[in-house]
Image (cartoon, rainbow, N blue to C red; front, top):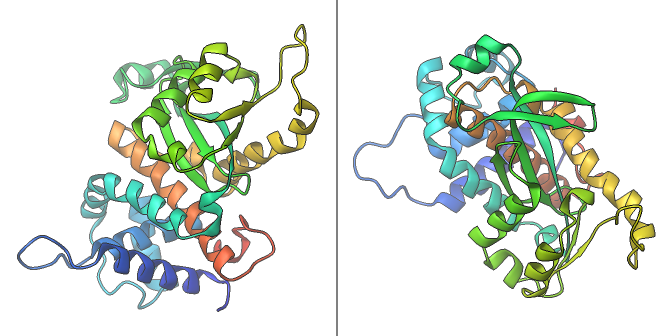
Length: 297
């Protein structure tokens, strides 16, 4: 099996179509199936076309015959937003189809997802009440938007994720994510979670220990270093590189969403694209698991 965009899209379509099986609803099926919709969404992100209208004009000339039917821009946008639960389930289904899913170590961090810059945009945005002001220490700047809280394996395979107001404590979000899906940690005895100083909390440590999970993160300078902390620095760079893939190659910060559903579905779209690339690279035995170079042209 070769590593190129057409091969990835074909393999992904077959995987999702087999996973979905026969549609449960009665009546005439839609002209663009759910499997085709998700494959089309992944192709859009990998090729870096942020405008949906431009993307639908782009497809016939650059992916001829791949999608026999294309909806209009409005129809595509509505189908995609309505498919948010399906996108979330597809990320999990594709991730579970790799040997990386059972990795006994996770890396957790959050990264800003900016949603507006001007004051008028903030005041009239449909994200009001969900998004908020936060501070990005990595770039020493304030932003208005959300934070993407991502739990992944050291190779970058997404395990679970959430979007939250940047004022909400990272420790609270991590606890809520794991409480919402308790099977994630119950099926991994001896799980190790690697985090940064933002997750320092005796309460969180106790909560995780009760569930058989150990957290490894740096201590504050005035505290005695914990065992294994000297190994953290290179491992911590892994989550930074995952965020760089999402922002640098998959244009996470240029999502263009203006509503709660719009932002969430565009983030999920990018996470599915990265998951699909990792899945395909792993299946074809590529040396670099998270490389997207073969699929971005």
